[in-house]
Amino acid sequence: MVKINGNPEDVDGMTLLTYLQREGYTLDRLAVECNEQIVPKSDYGNQLLADGDVLEIVSFVGGG
Figure (cartoon, rainbow, N blue to C red):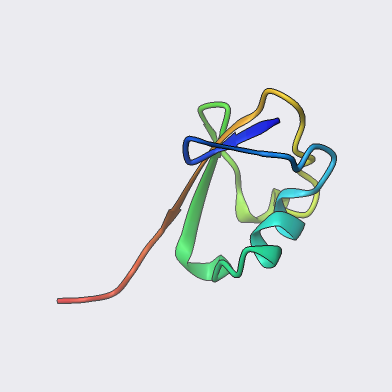
C-alpha cells in the first residue's frame, strides 16, 4: 500500500503520472512529495509507486 495524503491506496507499480491523471489532477498546478522529497514534474512519468511510499499531493488554487 501507498499512503497518499494520509489515505492508503493500492497503487503499487503504477507511475505517479498515471495515478495523477487517473485522479484528475491538473498537473501544472500541483506539487508532489514522495518520502519527504519533492518530485520534479519531469520525473512524474518515471516515478514508480511502491509499497510503503508516502505521498503528499498539494494542489494550488488561484484567488485573491
